[in-house]
Length: 109
Image: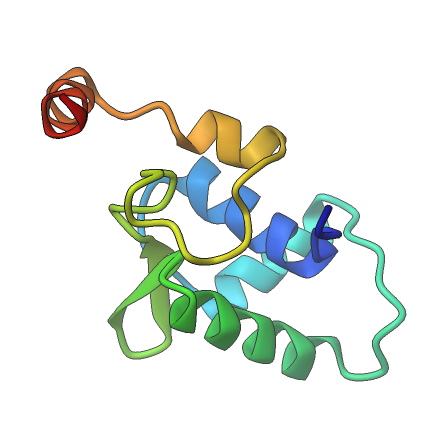
């Protein structure tokens, strides 16, 4: 089983909680306020790298200069290729709005 990256988990949690696009500094302030612990000597650089990884994996998407939000397809099992196929966050994110869930079920039939 793949070990979940704590940086990825924190970024996903704060973007999902915000339910709007956030800039990298806003994400960092929320992580700090929540008591995020790390061993990084340059945490903001690490955060930027982890945000870029999540964007490349299509978990989050860039919506403006330095602004990101959850990717609309994140959690849809038919489009997931990011290695987060199990775990508490992916289970919660797999709950799609009723219309999207119905369309997904029709495609599977």
